[in-house]
Length: 378
Image (cartoon, rainbow, N blue to C red; front, top):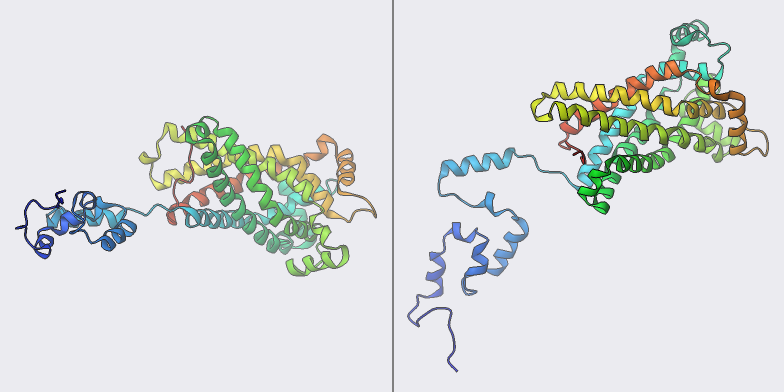
């Protein structure tokens, strides 16, 4: 049987001469590997290029130095798309900063709001009157009571909330498929925000318990560390999570309303005014407006649980009294009207901080190259 050769005649040029005929332009083409004889292919080199240069179109030379320079400039200026940990860590950092800055900055409003909830008979003059009462009775410094645990707690909570929201949203997209997730995006928003908030509250609860104790009893401790330690020493670690049920009852509906309303409002805004046509400043304004509306909705939904949380963390429970029985008792004492004590202060506070959060979050994502998030809007 006649043996077949890759080359038509024995007079074919030596292999080293054949290799020289293959230009660099040809070698960089993906077709080089499939249509060139094995005698010419340097397999280790090809596999190295396949691993380290998945895009052949940008690597190949066009034959023109000027065009090559333009192509390389475009490649250098095109931002690398972040994925995996690199992407979600940026979401988490942006969320941590936006939540800690806004909650920390609004500590004075939170102090007055908490006083109105805990002692409505004394603090019965509204938000502005409450400010005056606190300053008159305790000095201006009292308005910053609990700023340490507020900043620390919401830094952790913001990282897990915003980072987790984007992460779980992507998991739902992967599980359902993009088209199905997009058609049912409201359900995806609700499920993703609820799951993220659950894990965020595990980190937030001990610090929120310490903050409320410091605000309700200004002489209880000198700050975050001493207050945290005193609660653990006197009441045990469980006391830090006495408000875990109420905080879930408050934060999960709050976060679900916050993200869903924000997504829906911003979706309507950007449908009318496409992002590509808006400057960075106008996009920030759109985020502020969408966040403000989302904050109002979230405050109304979560107000009863917020009042109960303030009450349950104000004092120790009776011996043998469980969290559920305490919640039922507090709910009966408050009634519907009592559960909305301080709603004016909270509407102002939550509307402002939610608007600020989404504005800061959007700007930080752009600054860190994590723009767009995980979007499924039609």
